[in-house]
Length: 425
Image (cartoon, rainbow, N blue to C red; front, side, top):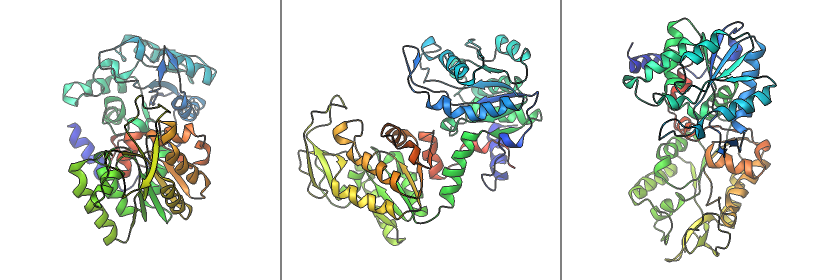
């Protein structure tokens, strides 16, 4: 069957995001291919942040306990110049073995699904775990199906009886190991389900945003309006209050007729920002923009240089020779007040150049406001998740998404291939 037609049929079947999970299948004695997100940061071959490994453990431990034979796979890095040991998943296998208290057999073969993998799978006992080499080493993970992505997906499916997708960070990509593999698992009568991590993302980002407890406040930051065109438009239809911060706020301020000095500006999106402000007004939604801003002479180089000088000015009084780099104290108060009365809050994108300690106050204070509210708080991955983790507020949030790009596309209302390829209940 043509792949595009297959996904069209799959999407037509879907009435909701009510997907089968690992709790809905019996894996005893069955080979289970689990797509994880082990795209962890490495330095000199050592893992510097094991958050994604820890996040995968509940699903892995559940399947082990139920007697499945686990075949784990993941990508790591961009792999632009071909396979290399610097992006091998060997360190992940070692760390996983430590976490599980059981050897995770690593298949080092750059072919990923070759004879070594086949032999290792054939020798597995119930509860055993193997980890395949970086899926992008194969060179067919990201390519179009007609360029052999489907062949790779079929080889992955040939190793297993059932498939579990627990890699939300890759769910917005129709890659061989994320979505295409499900077609071949279905053809052989197997199950395609989501893991606990994916289920949580669906529950919060999918269902909670579609049916939020109100008032629903959305906070969008980051550098460029262009990155979040569809998210702004979609959230304005769903939320009660939309808060704008970060570099993209200055294009909105320009659209209001303010002079913004040397601040970040997307001139091609000024009219779009005007349209969004008009849309908010016509639909009775609040669209909050900065009322004051922290300005600097020039963008810090290096980005974390703490020696920069700042001034705080009202948002309509940015000097011609300055650039805005964070929200000011009056804006922080305004945004924190909006969050206090909310019942659901979604946040994606920092309020300023949070990588710099001098320009991180706005992001810190928004995170603090979210940590103190009784609302359901959903952090949409990426820099927002990094900020919340760095600031020590992670345990105060209802949900921190594991996918930056994926969470944005989910908030846009897009159908993520990795989610929609799973079987419906």
